[in-house]
Amino acid sequence: GTTHLFWNPAMEYIKLQQVRDFLWAAAAFAPGRDTVISGDLNSMPGSDVYRLVTDGQVSHTYSPVSDDNEVLSHSWKRFDHPLKLRSAYDPPPEFSTLTDSFRGCLDHIFLSPNFWAEGTLDMYSEAVILENKSLPSVQYPSDHMSLIANIAL
Image (cartoon, rainbow, N blue to C red; front, side, top):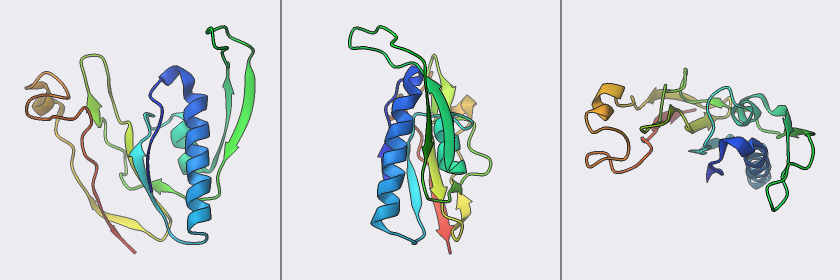
């Protein structure tokens, strides 16, 4: 399965709920089957979203806001899912997007334990991207680079 999560880094709890719901749906779609999960998680390695995917659970403290952007309170929630997943890229790329104001790995491929990545696509170097200032550019029309993994059982 693949997904694209909410972008705002200040609202990680929304992304946590999105990825939790997605992973539970993936588990229900193919119970007991090996799984490949990918997408633009808009989350860096080490984030709570990434840790939820790879560790199966995470506790997160957040501050919900009202419709007029007033902070309501501080809340705590535990998120979990039943799948066992690890990154196809080990280690994850340094970046999958590079702009004037941001450099980071937001895109990911995750595999069940019975799958492994025989190879992964190398990312362009930062120097090559910066020849065109940033992503997107005339040469690279997307603000994200492609991730590709050759997956085997």
